[in-house]
Length: 258
Ligand SMILES: [Zn+2]
Image (cartoon, rainbow, N blue to C red; front, side, top):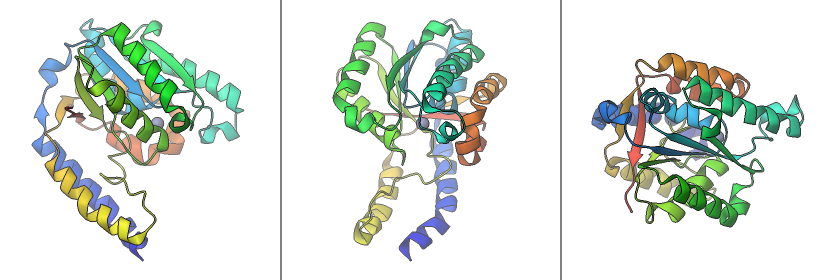
């Protein structure tokens, strides 16, 4: 009953929060090209969905961007058609290809190669790996995924905060991936009382969220489209709810402070 009610209000609440987020956001397009960036992505394609225009803008200005892909992507729905090992190989190639479409050299993409779906079981090694890359790259800006209902997205979001938020000298942002198409908050509770509590408390948290930094996609929408089309195989499975939102007027980044 509660679940059915939630399902019916989800699209409307998501649309409402999206409008509100954009209306309150600060257009930072003019500053977006500067600032060497480290971008943490749970899977190859998340960086393109959330940050492609930002990346293209920086690349066009000659600003250094390093993309870190945490998982090997072997277990997406496509692994039913192509074996997992082959799929992991294909997704590596696609990540480099997508980065090239955004103006980056192949060396800009780093792979941590954790098995798809196992980030939660590898929090220690994941933390050590991203700490080492951050120390090496010394970015001015750091972009981590915003928490959503995907377990790998949630884990990388949490581990990045725990590992880097206090220690980095970079400005720290989170970028939404599935946020746009689903709910602006994450309901994982199964106990009905917990569900009710989340449904009441999470919108309050959304309301109190700091204003997002907005980067216009204009001028780089073709590059973003090209990067997303490299991942066309993945987009068939997730595209129905992510893709329309990925190609809108702005990319949004939530500033996170310790
Ligand atoms: Zn993902």
